[in-house]
Length: 287
Image 1 (cartoon, helix red, strand yellow):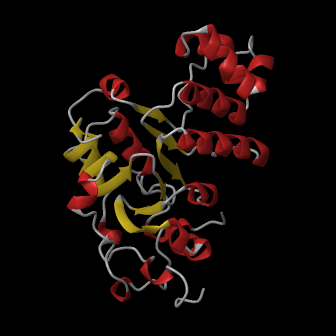
Image 2 (cartoon, rainbow, N blue to C red):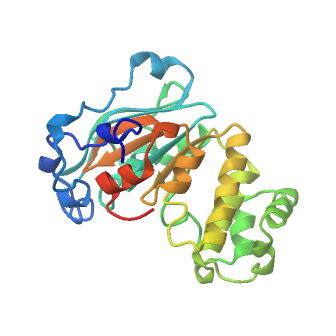
């Protein structure tokens, strides 16, 4: 792509990216999965740092210098992220970049080994997942966040307390009414994602973190989920859209953050992203 008209020159992994340790699952594919052979780290500036002023200007979610590990193997190496209230940030990266680990740290299911996690300015780094949820955080993990051994109706009864809320969920996602007696584990990926989204839309959280919301979905199901995410944003929810397939997430986002081997390799406005350049440099697959 024409470097004069795209963000491509900045889209180069940091010079030490190849030395970053990680778990086997977090570095699958090795450095070449996120760094093409002809990349020249010295030719590009380091990713822009998150300023202290940005952190105090109404951030709904903020990560500062987050490190995280599985056992003695460190996976995240000083990740910074600021999501404004009502804003949307797409976090993209190849398989093994550390995206799901970052989500686990945000949600409180994995403790950070260093750094801070804040919600609406309050430090929740040491708080368990259920207290973060009470503070307005909802995490939809890659595994959908549903009860697979229960029926669709039972999932809705557990998560949505009123008949009106359950009725609204079925009206928004008709497939949930049609599959009410079916075990959630027998739903398609798109149907499971709609079940997870129904809960979020019934009571929009302050912050919604979606880990791979389009993973394994047919185009029609992915479009339905993206419409629901857009509806959440219209309701004032701050979104963190974590994807390997970046296209749809970038369309919904204000800012794009690229993770490579557990570090922020690039960040910038979504409307400045050259999707082909990002894909070729970091994702290693078509989007």
